[in-house]
Image (cartoon, rainbow, N blue to C red):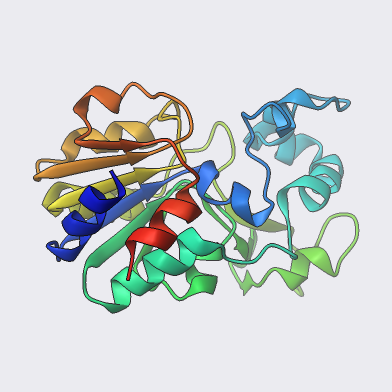
Length: 237
């Protein structure tokens, strides 16, 4: 399978990568739905409730206690998968990364065309004046972070009950629909509407890199169960 994937990458110049949490677990960022993920830990409230728009609005201080503790990992570094994808873009083979992750590791590895469906912890904005702040506005503050205008600073991430950004969705769907090869990695494909974007692919080959089975396996031309960093690290020159 590795040789087949190597040959496919070598012969392609219009690849799109669609990735999920499994891309970042090798960087030490927990997968929400894994055995050791946040959904299986105990808090005063379930994580999915804390990470909802309504909870953010009504319990902002508690939201930030959890967010700083569990959603930000400043020690995480790009792994072999992130680095390989950045290389493919530099080689003119990869047209875009479409990611469900919010950690900013693709950009840290050097990728330029990244569509972040669920936003990024690296970006934050004032809900009153819309001024943007970097991650330090959250990590270097306590309690509820405030803008110079007095407004509350909110992470530019998509919380439960919130919709995806229309522009990001359009660009991601366009990239997938025009791709020759679609590489899917580190996602169970159970999170919608993001997983539904794959139905727009009308290209030649689908590659699926995931440790467990997905509903998309039958449509894939190549399926590899090994760690994504290992696979892409070996298959990208």
